[in-house]
Length: 300
Image (cartoon, rainbow, N blue to C red):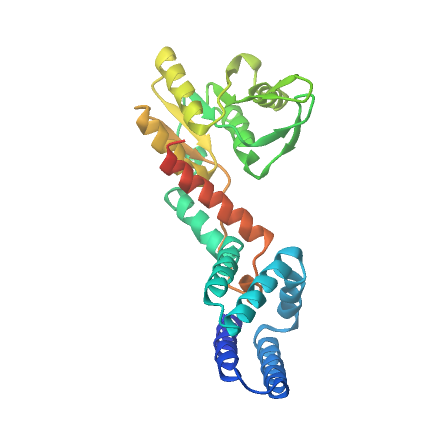
């Protein structure tokens, strides 16, 4: 945290120095900036330690870090040249990239989505006539086989565990039929069904809803199936960060379900020096949260 404060103070001093040296000789400006750079580096090194500084420098020389530095440098240069409009645009882009790649911001946004379900244990929720597992947990290859279980694939594995421990009488898999090059088609539910049977779930204990491409289409299909079968207790299983939107869509369909949450992806870590640099993990978290929030607004 001290390193972050020092970085902010250094940024403020840098802006002040930029204004103060305006109009002075180039040699004087060079000396002033060298002193500022050395002082900033020394302060951060002492506060964060050599390891954290190395990690930060490594992120800065990555493509995302270089673009971030370039935008920041461009904003400073055009501002110094008194091109206010261009400086504002470059500064806004720099700030946008900073936020889009911020791990602390992304973690807090995803944490907000997951907060209502923290501590929920699917194995303490009782037994269900059926558990519907929403799609999105696996990726398929060209033969329609599961190529990889993605980070959100915990929901697929958890569904099989709930059946095998007697908490679910039936499992429901739902998802799209994907078209491949050459006109061939592969079924997402068929691939999940195959995985579940390999994990010990009998085929006649699995129902498939093929075709839905969005969460809202999945919920419509599940609601139709629940009304047809007249089940009294149904669980909807999805990732914790996705559950808010899924439940909102269930309420729209007047579908009374029990939320069963799978993977939690947010994490609580101390804010380190490297957090000031946009990075891949931050982009992933911010994009995930933005997708869910915008999807909720759009009703999908």
